[in-house]
Amino acid sequence: MILITGAGGQIGGVLTKALQQRYGLSHVLPTDIHAGTFDGNLFELLDITDVERLRKLVVKYSVTEIYHLAAVLSARGESHPIPTWDINMKGLLNVLEMGREGLVEKIFFPSSIAVFGDEVPLDFAPQFGALIPKTVYGISKVAGESWCNYYHLKYGVDVRSVRFPGIIGYETLPGGGTTDYAVEIYHAAVKGERFVCYIAPDVKMPMIYMKDAIRAVIELMEAPKERVQVRTSYNLASMSFAPAEIYAAIKKEMPGFEIAYEPDFRDEIARSWPDQLDDERARTDWMWLPEFDLESMTKDMILHLLEQNAEIR
Ligand code: AKB
Picture: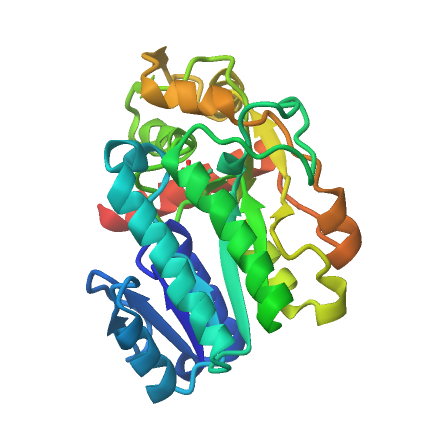
Protein backbone atom coordinates (compact mmCIF):
# COMPACT_ATOMS: atom_id res chain seq x y z
CA MET A 1 0.00 0.00 0.00
CA ILE A 2 1.16 3.54 -0.82
CA LEU A 3 0.30 6.26 1.71
CA ILE A 4 0.15 9.89 0.54
CA THR A 5 0.25 12.74 3.07
CA GLY A 6 -1.22 16.10 2.02
CA ALA A 7 -3.32 14.30 -0.62
CA GLY A 8 -5.73 17.23 -0.73
CA GLY A 9 -3.04 19.67 -1.85
CA GLN A 10 -1.95 20.90 -5.28
CA ILE A 11 0.44 18.03 -6.05
CA GLY A 12 -1.29 15.52 -3.75
CA GLY A 13 -4.58 15.54 -5.64
CA VAL A 14 -2.95 14.83 -9.00
CA LEU A 15 -0.33 12.41 -7.68
CA THR A 16 -3.01 10.39 -5.86
CA LYS A 17 -4.93 9.92 -9.13
CA ALA A 18 -1.76 9.06 -11.06
CA LEU A 19 -0.69 6.46 -8.49
CA GLN A 20 -4.21 5.03 -8.33
CA GLN A 21 -4.18 4.62 -12.11
CA ARG A 22 -0.75 3.01 -12.03
CA TYR A 23 -1.09 0.68 -9.04
CA GLY A 24 -4.87 0.33 -8.58
CA LEU A 25 -7.41 2.06 -6.33
CA SER A 26 -6.99 -0.48 -3.54
CA HIS A 27 -3.22 0.13 -3.32
CA VAL A 28 -3.24 3.87 -2.64
CA LEU A 29 -4.24 5.50 0.65
CA PRO A 30 -4.77 9.28 0.42
CA THR A 31 -4.53 11.08 3.76
CA ASP A 32 -4.92 14.73 4.69
CA ILE A 33 -5.60 16.93 7.70
CA HIS A 34 -8.90 17.97 6.04
CA ALA A 35 -11.57 15.59 4.77
CA GLY A 36 -11.61 15.25 1.00
CA THR A 37 -13.17 13.31 -1.84
CA PHE A 38 -11.02 10.82 -3.69
CA ASP A 39 -11.72 8.02 -6.17
CA GLY A 40 -12.31 4.71 -4.43
CA ASN A 41 -13.27 4.22 -0.81
CA LEU A 42 -9.91 4.75 0.82
CA PHE A 43 -9.16 7.93 2.75
CA GLU A 44 -7.94 8.66 6.28
CA LEU A 45 -7.65 11.88 8.23
CA LEU A 46 -4.05 12.46 9.32
CA ASP A 47 -2.33 15.30 11.12
CA ILE A 48 1.24 14.58 10.09
CA THR A 49 2.64 15.88 13.37
CA ASP A 50 0.87 12.97 15.14
CA VAL A 51 3.37 10.09 14.93
CA GLU A 52 1.14 7.61 16.79
CA ARG A 53 -1.68 8.10 14.27
CA LEU A 54 0.77 7.78 11.38
CA ARG A 55 2.22 4.54 12.80
CA LYS A 56 -1.29 3.16 13.37
CA LEU A 57 -2.24 3.80 9.73
CA VAL A 58 1.05 2.41 8.42
CA VAL A 59 0.53 -0.82 10.38
CA LYS A 60 -3.23 -1.10 9.72
CA TYR A 61 -2.84 -0.77 5.93
CA SER A 62 0.55 -2.53 5.62
CA VAL A 63 2.01 0.59 4.02
CA THR A 64 5.25 0.04 2.09
CA GLU A 65 5.78 3.51 0.58
CA ILE A 66 5.04 7.05 1.78
CA TYR A 67 4.82 10.09 -0.49
CA HIS A 68 5.10 12.89 2.05
CA LEU A 69 3.54 16.01 0.53
CA ALA A 70 2.01 17.71 3.58
CA ALA A 71 3.81 21.03 4.22
CA VAL A 72 3.30 24.77 4.66
CA LEU A 73 4.66 26.62 1.60
CA SER A 74 6.90 29.65 1.17
CA ALA A 75 4.55 32.65 1.21
CA ARG A 76 2.16 31.40 3.92
CA GLY A 77 5.11 30.24 6.04
CA GLU A 78 6.39 33.80 6.40
CA SER A 79 3.40 34.84 8.51
CA HIS A 80 3.62 31.71 10.74
CA PRO A 81 7.34 30.90 11.08
CA ILE A 82 7.29 28.62 14.14
CA PRO A 83 4.18 26.57 13.21
CA THR A 84 5.64 26.23 9.70
CA TRP A 85 8.91 24.91 11.08
CA ASP A 86 7.05 22.55 13.46
CA ILE A 87 4.74 21.13 10.78
CA ASN A 88 7.39 20.80 8.08
CA MET A 89 10.09 19.30 10.29
CA LYS A 90 8.01 17.16 12.65
CA GLY A 91 6.03 15.83 9.69
CA LEU A 92 9.15 14.77 7.81
CA LEU A 93 10.84 13.28 10.87
CA ASN A 94 7.71 11.26 11.69
CA VAL A 95 7.71 9.86 8.15
CA LEU A 96 11.46 9.12 8.24
CA GLU A 97 10.95 7.30 11.54
CA MET A 98 8.60 4.89 9.75
CA GLY A 99 11.57 4.06 7.53
CA ARG A 100 13.99 3.72 10.44
CA GLU A 101 11.58 1.42 12.27
CA GLY A 102 11.55 -0.79 9.16
CA LEU A 103 7.81 -0.31 8.64
CA VAL A 104 8.07 1.22 5.15
CA GLU A 105 10.48 0.49 2.31
CA LYS A 106 10.54 3.76 0.36
CA ILE A 107 9.82 7.44 1.02
CA PHE A 108 9.37 10.44 -1.30
CA PHE A 109 10.14 13.92 0.04
CA PRO A 110 9.54 17.01 -2.12
CA SER A 111 12.19 19.66 -1.65
CA SER A 112 12.08 22.97 -3.51
CA ILE A 113 13.96 25.71 -5.35
CA ALA A 114 13.36 27.58 -2.07
CA VAL A 115 16.52 25.95 -0.67
CA PHE A 116 18.59 28.46 -2.67
CA GLY A 117 19.35 32.02 -1.66
CA ASP A 118 22.57 33.89 -0.94
CA GLU A 119 26.05 32.90 -2.18
CA VAL A 120 24.87 30.79 -5.10
CA PRO A 121 24.72 31.77 -8.82
CA LEU A 122 21.01 32.39 -9.27
CA ASP A 123 21.24 32.43 -13.07
CA PHE A 124 22.01 28.67 -13.02
CA ALA A 125 21.86 27.13 -9.55
CA PRO A 126 24.19 24.14 -9.21
CA GLN A 127 23.24 20.73 -7.80
CA PHE A 128 25.75 21.16 -5.00
CA GLY A 129 26.41 24.63 -3.60
CA ALA A 130 25.56 27.05 -0.82
CA LEU A 131 22.05 26.68 0.59
CA ILE A 132 21.28 29.91 2.46
CA PRO A 133 17.52 30.41 2.01
CA LYS A 134 15.55 33.56 2.84
CA THR A 135 12.27 31.90 3.94
CA VAL A 136 11.26 29.62 6.82
CA TYR A 137 9.94 27.17 4.23
CA GLY A 138 13.35 27.20 2.51
CA ILE A 139 15.13 26.63 5.83
CA SER A 140 12.83 23.67 6.55
CA LYS A 141 13.57 22.19 3.11
CA VAL A 142 17.36 22.56 3.54
CA ALA A 143 17.14 20.87 6.95
CA GLY A 144 14.74 18.28 5.51
CA GLU A 145 17.17 17.35 2.74
CA SER A 146 19.93 16.86 5.29
CA TRP A 147 17.67 14.71 7.47
CA CYS A 148 16.83 12.55 4.43
CA ASN A 149 20.53 12.10 3.68
CA TYR A 150 21.21 11.33 7.36
CA TYR A 151 18.48 8.67 7.61
CA HIS A 152 19.78 7.13 4.39
CA LEU A 153 23.41 7.02 5.52
CA LYS A 154 22.79 6.11 9.15
CA TYR A 155 19.77 3.79 8.93
CA GLY A 156 19.69 2.78 5.25
CA VAL A 157 16.28 4.41 4.69
CA ASP A 158 15.48 4.55 0.96
CA VAL A 159 14.32 8.15 0.79
CA ARG A 160 14.25 9.97 -2.54
CA SER A 161 13.72 13.64 -3.28
CA VAL A 162 13.58 16.34 -5.97
CA ARG A 163 13.80 20.11 -5.65
CA PHE A 164 10.55 21.14 -7.30
CA PRO A 165 10.29 24.34 -9.30
CA GLY A 166 6.87 26.09 -9.30
CA ILE A 167 4.30 23.55 -10.48
CA ILE A 168 1.58 24.53 -12.96
CA GLY A 169 -1.49 22.39 -13.54
CA TYR A 170 -5.19 22.72 -14.35
CA GLU A 171 -6.44 19.95 -12.04
CA THR A 172 -5.81 21.53 -8.63
CA LEU A 173 -5.15 24.98 -7.17
CA PRO A 174 -1.97 25.82 -5.29
CA GLY A 175 -2.13 27.60 -1.92
CA GLY A 176 0.38 29.67 0.01
CA GLY A 177 3.26 29.50 -2.48
CA THR A 178 5.30 32.17 -4.25
CA THR A 179 4.96 30.54 -7.68
CA ASP A 180 1.12 30.33 -7.42
CA TYR A 181 0.71 33.31 -9.79
CA ALA A 182 1.70 31.08 -12.70
CA VAL A 183 -1.42 28.95 -12.13
CA GLU A 184 -3.76 31.81 -11.19
CA ILE A 185 -2.87 33.71 -14.38
CA TYR A 186 -4.37 30.92 -16.55
CA HIS A 187 -7.57 30.85 -14.49
CA ALA A 188 -7.96 34.62 -14.92
CA ALA A 189 -7.29 34.37 -18.66
CA VAL A 190 -9.95 31.71 -19.36
CA LYS A 191 -12.50 33.58 -17.24
CA GLY A 192 -11.84 36.71 -19.31
CA GLU A 193 -10.60 38.60 -16.24
CA ARG A 194 -7.71 41.08 -16.01
CA PHE A 195 -4.87 39.57 -13.94
CA VAL A 196 -3.08 41.50 -11.20
CA CYS A 197 0.35 39.93 -10.77
CA TYR A 198 2.17 40.10 -7.41
CA ILE A 199 5.56 39.40 -9.05
CA ALA A 200 7.30 42.10 -11.17
CA PRO A 201 7.27 41.48 -14.95
CA ASP A 202 10.96 40.56 -15.28
CA VAL A 203 11.47 38.21 -12.28
CA LYS A 204 12.21 34.74 -13.63
CA MET A 205 11.60 31.52 -11.72
CA PRO A 206 12.02 27.86 -12.69
CA MET A 207 8.67 26.19 -13.39
CA ILE A 208 7.38 22.79 -14.47
CA TYR A 209 4.12 21.49 -15.91
CA MET A 210 2.20 19.16 -13.56
CA LYS A 211 2.34 16.29 -16.06
CA ASP A 212 6.14 16.44 -16.09
CA ALA A 213 6.32 16.88 -12.30
CA ILE A 214 4.21 13.77 -11.64
CA ARG A 215 6.21 11.75 -14.16
CA ALA A 216 9.43 12.88 -12.44
CA VAL A 217 8.19 11.62 -9.06
CA ILE A 218 7.14 8.25 -10.47
CA GLU A 219 10.35 7.81 -12.49
CA LEU A 220 12.53 8.67 -9.49
CA MET A 221 10.58 6.34 -7.19
CA GLU A 222 10.73 3.49 -9.70
CA ALA A 223 14.44 3.94 -10.53
CA PRO A 224 16.74 1.12 -9.38
CA LYS A 225 18.16 1.95 -5.95
CA GLU A 226 21.76 2.09 -7.12
CA ARG A 227 20.94 4.81 -9.68
CA VAL A 228 19.66 7.16 -6.96
CA GLN A 229 22.99 8.58 -5.89
CA VAL A 230 21.93 11.97 -4.53
CA ARG A 231 20.21 11.40 -1.20
CA THR A 232 19.74 15.04 -0.24
CA SER A 233 17.61 16.14 -3.22
CA TYR A 234 17.92 16.34 -7.00
CA ASN A 235 17.65 19.66 -8.84
CA LEU A 236 14.73 19.24 -11.25
CA ALA A 237 14.50 21.65 -14.18
CA SER A 238 12.06 22.12 -17.00
CA MET A 239 11.19 25.65 -18.16
CA SER A 240 11.95 29.08 -16.74
CA PHE A 241 10.10 32.35 -17.33
CA ALA A 242 9.11 35.73 -15.89
CA PRO A 243 5.52 37.02 -15.64
CA ALA A 244 5.93 39.11 -18.82
CA GLU A 245 6.83 35.94 -20.76
CA ILE A 246 3.95 33.80 -19.51
CA TYR A 247 1.64 36.74 -20.17
CA ALA A 248 2.92 36.98 -23.77
CA ALA A 249 2.43 33.21 -24.26
CA ILE A 250 -1.18 33.40 -23.02
CA LYS A 251 -1.93 36.56 -25.00
CA LYS A 252 -0.90 34.73 -28.17
CA GLU A 253 -3.78 32.30 -27.51
CA MET A 254 -6.17 34.86 -25.98
CA PRO A 255 -5.44 38.27 -27.53
CA GLY A 256 -7.85 40.19 -25.26
CA PHE A 257 -6.07 39.17 -22.03
CA GLU A 258 -4.82 42.06 -19.85
CA ILE A 259 -2.31 42.16 -16.98
CA ALA A 260 -1.25 44.68 -14.31
CA TYR A 261 1.67 44.40 -11.88
CA GLU A 262 1.49 45.06 -8.12
CA PRO A 263 4.55 43.35 -6.62
CA ASP A 264 4.28 42.47 -2.92
CA PHE A 265 6.47 40.53 -0.40
CA ARG A 266 6.35 37.47 -2.66
CA ASP A 267 8.33 39.39 -5.28
CA GLU A 268 11.22 39.59 -2.77
CA ILE A 269 11.03 35.84 -2.17
CA ALA A 270 11.03 35.20 -5.93
CA ARG A 271 14.12 37.38 -6.38
CA SER A 272 16.00 35.24 -3.83
CA TRP A 273 15.31 32.08 -5.86
CA PRO A 274 17.23 30.95 -8.96
CA ASP A 275 16.20 31.80 -12.53
CA GLN A 276 17.25 28.34 -13.69
CA LEU A 277 18.65 25.11 -12.27
CA ASP A 278 21.37 22.73 -13.34
CA ASP A 279 19.62 19.34 -13.29
CA GLU A 280 22.36 17.33 -15.02
CA ARG A 281 22.56 14.82 -12.14
CA ALA A 282 18.85 13.95 -12.43
CA ARG A 283 19.30 13.57 -16.20
CA THR A 284 22.27 11.22 -15.90
CA ASP A 285 21.34 9.28 -12.74
CA TRP A 286 17.71 8.41 -13.54
CA MET A 287 17.29 9.79 -17.09
CA TRP A 288 15.10 12.78 -16.25
CA LEU A 289 13.82 14.59 -19.36
CA PRO A 290 11.01 17.17 -19.33
CA GLU A 291 8.50 17.23 -22.19
CA PHE A 292 6.63 20.52 -21.90
CA ASP A 293 7.84 24.04 -22.63
CA LEU A 294 6.02 27.33 -22.01
CA GLU A 295 4.21 27.21 -25.37
CA SER A 296 3.00 23.60 -25.22
CA MET A 297 2.03 23.95 -21.54
CA THR A 298 0.04 27.12 -22.29
CA LYS A 299 -1.94 25.44 -25.07
CA ASP A 300 -2.68 22.41 -22.86
CA MET A 301 -3.61 24.51 -19.80
CA ILE A 302 -6.02 26.72 -21.75
CA LEU A 303 -7.62 23.74 -23.49
CA HIS A 304 -8.30 21.92 -20.21
CA LEU A 305 -9.42 24.98 -18.25
CA LEU A 306 -11.86 25.94 -21.02
CA GLU A 307 -13.24 22.38 -20.95
CA GLN A 308 -13.58 22.49 -17.14
CA ASN A 309 -15.38 25.84 -17.30
CA ALA A 310 -17.76 24.54 -19.98
CA GLU A 311 -18.58 21.52 -17.76
CA ILE A 312 -19.35 23.79 -14.79
CA ARG A 313 -21.77 25.94 -16.86
C1 AKB B 1 6.27 27.77 -3.37
O1 AKB B 1 6.12 28.71 -4.17
O2 AKB B 1 6.39 27.92 -2.16
C2 AKB B 1 6.35 26.37 -3.93
C3 AKB B 1 7.76 25.95 -4.17
C4 AKB B 1 8.52 26.50 -5.30
O3 AKB B 1 8.28 25.16 -3.43
N1 AKB B 1 5.58 26.28 -5.14
